[in-house]
Image (cartoon, rainbow, N blue to C red):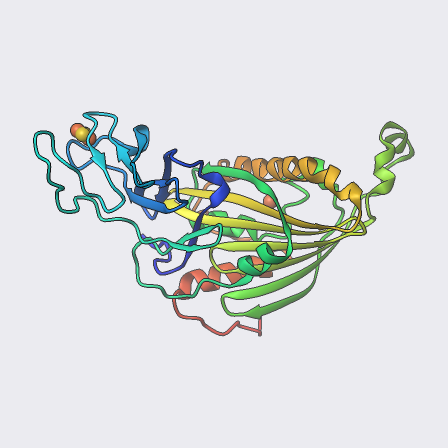
Length: 329
Ligand code: FES
Ligand SMILES: [Fe+2]
């Protein structure tokens, strides 16, 4: 199974982990239990208990006197510390490690992992830069979708699906890719999207229509394969909408979106909830269409503006090598 072993994956943002609560994470066909102890230390162990295979993520966390915490198995209540050691009943000695901890790379609030594989591409510094400069609004659009990673990435870099998948939301008339800068595993797309002009009736029904820009301009910055970033600029606010993708298993993928903003007007703060809700609806629409696609259908029609998808396909095939873009196409 080709799932791009050696790419970094953002497993979670720290806000997704409540202290001493267990979170189940799946990556590259393996399940893990992840938690944060009272000191803010984050750990992850394989989720299958080495006694009789119960899911540790269904158990609970026990805080230790020193502030660390251990995971208790829900079946027979053995406790495993962050190194995967336990103390068997009747013994007062710790066992050797019975569960190999998942290697995590923690950068501030960002929890990255290579899933135990040798790194083939570096973790970009962009999230640390955004976190230092922008206000974190929240996590939204978290979904586990029954689709393979390639289909998910194709959808997320498809600049034509606004009119189908997201038609009620944006009412976009046409999409123009003004510029696509291809730098191997990194790329930028600049889109111009004229919107359908509302009819007189529609304006009467919803005067807010008048406030929507006539042309939606978008700058997307892509980091193959794990992240897509929308840079939004507006009179009210600057927005950083950071989409993360990861392969849970061969036919199961997860997405979530971290939202950051810089307010240029106090009104911007009133929009935070709506922004999170809007993106949640967008991801929901993507998840719906992804569950209604016959994967492996040969593509016999090519539309304009598929340059983002071409970029995904090329990188997917060549990973971890980077091949030059075929500019003759
Ligand atoms: S299965 Fe976990 S303690 Fe028995
Ligand atoms: Fe979409």
